[in-house]
Length: 319
Image (tube, rainbow, N blue to C red):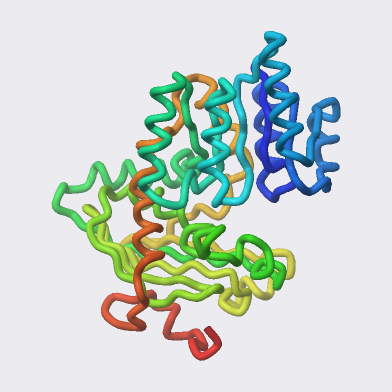
């Protein structure tokens, strides 16, 4: 049985990590969050120690270490801009790190983490769950089996509705979240790289606090992508479903790739691979982190060239 600590216990994604720790037969012994709205811990690890102050959490971890009760892994679910610092803390504390996406906001931070790995002998793992999705694995196989000179035409659409709170929270601050393309899109860019190869060209058509859209040229694909948190951008068929406020779509050469389901246990599968020493590390993150960093520095050019078809239907004056 492995022991875990968790940083960011009150966040949206933290319960998936708690569930993965439990599902793999391990134990959470300590958790940290400045918010104390962590009643969800009772469903998984009610006996875990909990701290709202980093200093007390750090002292607790250090005391455990001096008593020979080391922590094997630190799971990191904190705001994006803190990931780099919290991964470094985990390594210095003698634990391997398991970090939510994005691993870091900028590619040069990855080099620093690589140096920390070498210095501490510990590993950095990240959650790149789309690489484990059966539909994405099947698509990658299809691409590999196609003629090497085949280039696929892809439209990627991801609309996940968020309320007004989003812009007020750290997620709405580009310096803390990295913006829409980073916060909700980085794992899609990783998936595109995983399936279609190296990203060769970037274009940014639209970018605001609610939506980002652009074009990527990859080794094996031409991709028009759109990411949005505005419920007004949902297709009418989805709006009619009161309980459904998310729309995911990938079309490849006009064919829809179904991947709306199958997400429930991907964190557990990620943990199983990590515990087996086969998780995704720093190098696997480089392409997607570079992509979102590049896009963050670009000025949108508007609806020019190969832009996402949905842009024609949107009220761009609202953005």
